[in-house]
Amino acid sequence: MPPSRRPPPASRPGGPRPGVLLAPLLLLALQGVAAAAPAGAGGPEDTPGLQDAELQRGLLQQAARAALHFFNFRAGSPSALRVLAAVLEGRARVNPKKECQVDLVFTTDHYNPEAGEERLGKCSARVFFRNQKPRPAINVTCTRLIEKNKRQQEDYLLYTHMKQLKTPLDIVSIPDSHGHIDPSLRPIWDLAFLGSSYVMWEKTTQFLHYYMAQISSVNQWKTNDDAVDFDYTVLLHEFSTQEIIPCRIHLVWYPGKPLKVKYHCQELQMPEEASGTEESSAVAPTELNNS
Image: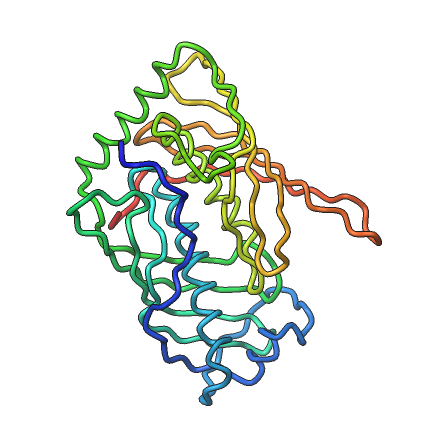
């Protein structure tokens, strides 16, 4: 079990500043001037002209984070989790409906790197933001970061650890108030991060991204089959609003089988709005190439 630590942020500053082509129309969309438009047909068109470098960099990082959330969910493996290291290059295009397509290449780190192991992997992705709508369309391919046999072995060890718990889990606050994750609770955090990756991908927009800040409660139930089946509540940090969004997630996991996720997020109330929630469920494919 690796030393416990506060989980790394979803992205890391300091990577090479990418070059990108952004249309003036896209710059307006990034600044929130353009209104939302429904998704539809219409091929993106390139328009040269470098605009604000920070906006360009922010859009590429936003696309890389969304692609990694999607990749982690589809992989369905706590041992294959990745975090963003740096964006290497990318290009953004916008169509007349203000829908933004981003093609990029970025490097990743293993979520729980071991001493002396090769940490960096590389991914290429195409991310399609439907203006201000959540759940971007994503196509992502990553080079191998951990050998398949080793990944399966680590997943099975985590699985047996979870199944050997003699009593259902009843845990509050991971990490604790000091930012510490007890080594015995690290498998819980990793599984929660795996399930939360789906939620964070579904909620990501061109302007908002999310980071799993804390698990506020965990409960596990024994099931008739062999799967790990538990329900937990996470606090998601929403950028750039800085709001903390509680989400209750139900996860069913067995190594090598599709990951099943259901969730219910409670948005914070605004004075002029009624309370709102989002619900969704998904099953990830069993196989993932190039993972």
